[in-house]
Image (tube, rainbow, N blue to C red; front, side, top):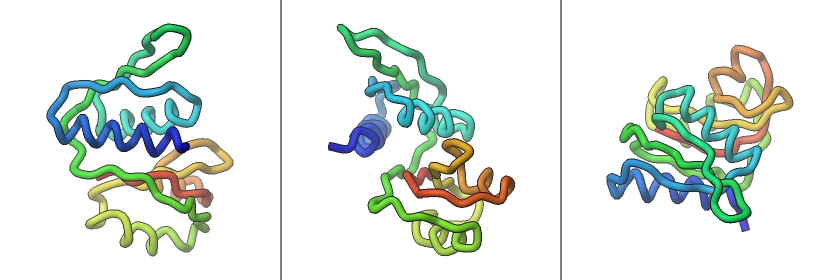
Length: 126
């Protein structure tokens, strides 16, 4: 069971259906990925919602996502290999982002290039 894959799929389905928001599970990884998507303008925002004993995130969709998906297996990417994965998962230059897990936290491929660090691919959004 992959909570991140389920979350990305739920965001994609709700965005395609034209809904204004979706409610997803709240974990540290999912919160960090949603924060990266918010920073880059793919979602409008999110807020914490208490649902029974569990915390959930209510994500307000910005209607800007063309496609979003999870990358499996989670490839390890060195700084020199970003171009290969950008051409594989993003349709054109500067049109989308790859979301990575690095030693410095969850960030986009552009931020990882600026900080000169590699990491593991998690998802793509455009």
